Length: 465
Ligand code: GLY
Ligand code: MN
Ligand code: MN
Image (cartoon, rainbow, N blue to C red; front, top):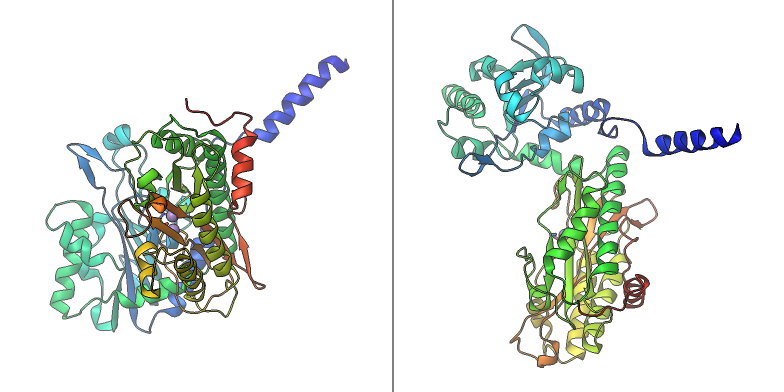
């Protein structure tokens, strides 16, 4: 009896552990999006309307499109991931097409023939059900003349509106038709749309992450940490930059990540000094550093993590010196990540450490030369966009941003050639809390000792293949 029962129990456990849901069930909830729309409306000026477009699909080549990336402002406010849509938010209630309210959305109509090729289009009924929105229409029902401009003092456009109008004029597609109709109605009414109020409000809202967003950020950052750790354990001379990319992205994908947050950067040797290197074709040589700047994307949210590792598992003396200087800069920046400090404080601290260190090493002679080798900023907000919206003034709980100092010394730099081809960036994703910060990417090793230990722990000597 027990012999029969035991496997049954084990099997049931396994099913429970793996989950039986057909699709992920951890998307942002309709209540989250409704809350974000309410917060946005709260900050709108009196007698205003705000309009958010979902951009159309873009052609990659011939009849192949790029993978569609939902327009992030519209996604934040509704959850909608389809192209060709327009959301109208009114400060005061209005009546449009027989419906009274403050929120109206126009979406692409269903099209059974197209759906057979490229999948389900939600249509108004689907959008009502999935996102629990009430006033949902199709794009062909929209006309700029629906808006009573006499009642509106401020017309707010999402910051991409102008680009839509100029980029897709007269293409005859759903979005261009809506944009053109809106444009001519605005012209007739003598109203000029303004992007800046929407941008200012969205910086405030998107820059402070809600608990549901923090939960997704933790997931996507953990996926990314697993990718980095896999690369640290596996990579060795004779493999290629693209092997690092493949190992990394396998770990992302196999955890449910839909895309990468940005093209993976896997630069070895001199390529480690190219800030946004994406070619990833070189064969890894014994003695190289390999800079991996890679982050997964999950349900629209992106991680952004960099680890720089020795391909053979052990830093050379020069690599170790530069690495530990970047690490000290990052630690100095971390120390200033707390509420009340300025967004620029961590960067200034990192720059100070790197400047003093490069001078001590004789790599630079004067302070203003530091930017030759550390030419970028230390922090940017992180969330729905890898370079996310958010205030760059005072740090507040709920902000998530990167801390990513670096030193890059390309070949033929004006210093001793023993430093050439050393490019180091260390990038972590921090959540500001009421007490200070939590490093969400701390699961990937940061110190020389931790990295060398993880590289060794795979049990293989890092010999050339
Ligand atoms: N991965 C791009 C950046 O670090 O900003
Ligand atoms: Mn970054
Ligand atoms: Mn990065």
